[in-house]
Length: 65
Image (cartoon, rainbow, N blue to C red):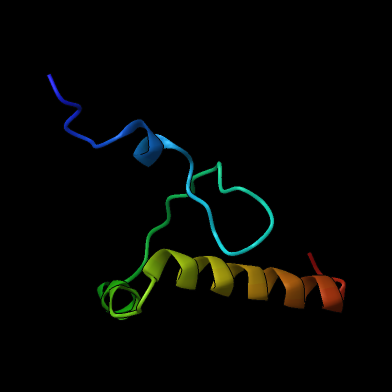
């Protein structure tokens, strides 16, 4: 019986353009408007990762984190 979720390669943790593999998941709540705006992006998951990383980097530079 075929695997309904695809090939074993599809089950590997996601890879991004950066240097570290994506192995963890985070769930968060957003407003309906935020969700719609995110879904309109070319690559919604990468958009969210970049936004979070940008905020973390900004906090690190300011010494508040």
